[in-house]
Length: 275
Ligand SMILES: Cc1cc2nc3c(=O)[nH]c(=O)nc-3n(C[C@H](O)[C@H](O)[C@H](O)COP(=O)(O)O)c2cc1C
Image (cartoon, rainbow, N blue to C red; front, top):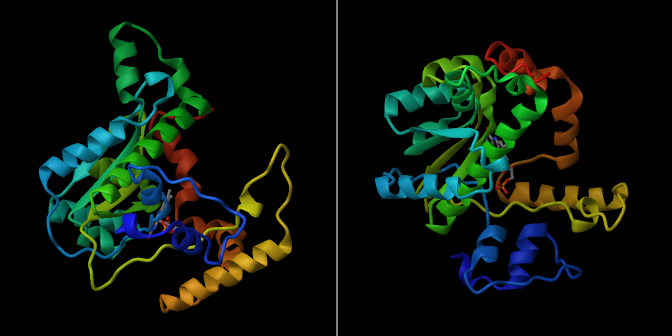
């Protein structure tokens, strides 16, 4: 349980090294401990997730801030095994989606806004601009993060699934998503498999991501230090791999986008031209 871990351990696990420079203020409610102890869970024990928990996760998601209170997002709750398997196939064919009893698809959704405007004889021209796509996408993403935080607070495990954007046209058809909406991110949720526990994955040192007053480029030695910490972490998980290599591989060519290079065109065909 996160609340019995001392702050030194929390920091060490979060950065993969002794983090002497970072201080930590912990709150009584355990919220910060919970955030720091986050780890993606991709192994579930098969127990179902109670309907009251699903309601709670959606309420937590709806409690996130939302741009101008427009609430331009929706969530599709997928629990049916056959349906979930079809969704998994379109989301990178990742087995843990089938294993998870619950899969939430967070959707950027201007369909409601468009319908409200149409009912008043208004054109809804503004939906076609890039910022409107961003507004709905950011709303959907932070709603999803709230759902994950709530799930973890209840002892569940969860993992984001960006692969819902690999084949968003087909997934939208499968989920019955209307025009002016698209799947932003999925969240697989379930009870963590105790025999296959997930561990906290180290993050970059603060010196790399934090810029006081003005931006400063990351030092090669700080990046190398992190690469080494992540390599040790990967080894402890029976994996090999360098973070620096992964960054290069991800941006080297369009093939690493797994179909997402088509996203702008697909959004356009779905009524979100993002001009
Ligand atoms: C937007 C987003 C999309 C992601 N998509 C996937 C995915 O499709 N499959 C997967 O296994 N993990 C996915 N992840 C999980 C990341 O791989 C994970 O958060 C990262 O490796 C850090 O590990 P941690 O969450 O355990 O700290 C995604 C995370 C985010 C934020």
